Amino acid sequence: MPYDHKKTEDQWFKRNERELIENLRRERKRKEKELAGLMKQEEAKKRKELHWMKCPKCGSDLKEEEIVGVRIDRCTLCEGIYLDRGELEEFLLKKQGERRSFMRRITGLFSS
Image (cartoon, rainbow, N blue to C red; front, side, top):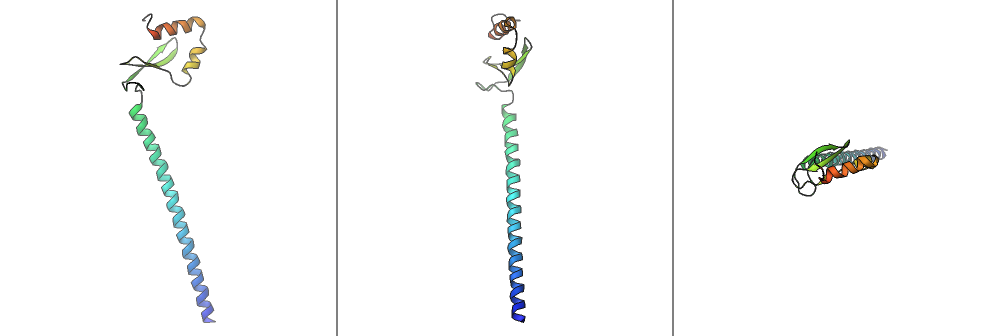
């Protein structure tokens, strides 16, 4: 009978060690996933800081302007015009006279 007791004890230790190792593996994977998520967020934050209010064409600073109630971003060097999400729709909802005025202002036909 002592042999059976020893065999049962060995099986318990083997099973317990396997569970401990598996739990450690799961915890390590969870931490790696969490770290990867944090690194991805940090990378996105750095990219945003590098490109925030920069011209996609020449890389110069963008200056925000309001024309006929629509806020646009204009490059200080190449004078490119960029619209954020929703600004084009906002422009298209304007009355025809306001749209004409907006187009004249952004194309520089009439400076204000």
